Image (cartoon, rainbow, N blue to C red; front, top):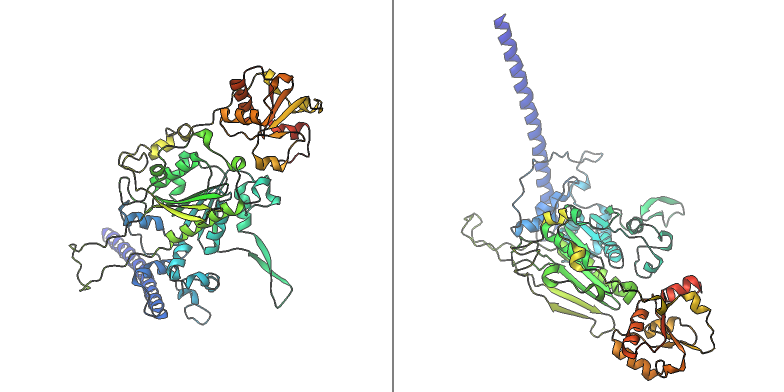
Length: 555
């Protein structure tokens, strides 16, 4: 019995070895088929291009033929800059050659892009700045757009049109009617909905395609670019999740409009090792910055500055104007958003540096000096719609040696973000609320409307001349508040509205929202004393519309 048991054990062992060997053989055959297919494709690409296909593009081009491959362009930049080590090679993927009905390799196995993609992107691919190599990098790229307002809408549209493979879209706001004159992805039908959903709907809008040969509609097709994948984030960026989200992308666009978000996005890009394209716009002017480019280790002076390097301290919170307060011209913010998309495309399609010429191709010694990458000169592009020239560029400083985010002694870390110890609201400050005037110095809009209009009182409108020309109450005097109490009082006295106040007439001050009018009342009391009877209309013209005249323009 022992002899039979030994024989059975030996047979089982042999069968196991044979099965294992056959499995390895199948794997080797599949890998051989994949290698032969890649080699043939490389030869076909080489033959298809006059002068030969650039050797440094072969690997990236072949990678695009496998839809399951994920290529991280920013990781490549970080490895080149020494930010992180080279990745561990993954096992070779097994791919079966695609055959057509006749058994020959299909066209998809020869060319890295589909026939429709060559037609779609042909006008930009024929330029040497893009080419096939650049188009493939766009196709494999992942870009995150933070903020889907006047900047983010055109930026996302042009990136999708250019063929960026994956677009992340992040915004926690809803669409308002006042957005529609400049935020081109939103429309009347989406007012009240999330900006992210409105933007995705705009970018993925499906239409019935009508052919010229027939009036019957074909299948639904995406009206912009069906090759783009969208990842929506229906919330504002939070410090505890910022780095984890940014690590999924190659590039980040800051399309927000407040210092707290700008510092957070810049800090997270430094920690995640991602380049950042940042822009801003207000009234008729805009600014564009490319930050943390190339993304390198903290303390590496060869990398570009971060937002904190340029603006170590935020501006006073009371000095910050929003678009609702200072105004914005739609094409101005649109220009800046388009420029953001352009900078993103430039970064993503940048050609790899040419290797140095070698006298002997077999010389693999480690003593050779690596090529020196040209230093990136950080600049700020400034745009002013009503100036000549409209564009000018300002040279920026490099990384600060004492920067809190990108220097050797950085205090902003991933731990400080995730734990909340880096408080961006406290760092940027908050606006100081006005101490309300005492009740005897105020009057409601409804009570003011009941006063006689026989000239027994004086109404002073302190909005600027542009707003005063939009709408004004009959008989009011416009003396714009300029922030200088003494100068304003002197102007009011010169204009006659504050002189001769012994006549017993009462002065009433009104503004747009009820803030500047309180400052004016305080200025009058400070410089002319309490003998002047002056009150402010609570809530300004916003309260006037809500409580007195519903037809009053709301702007």
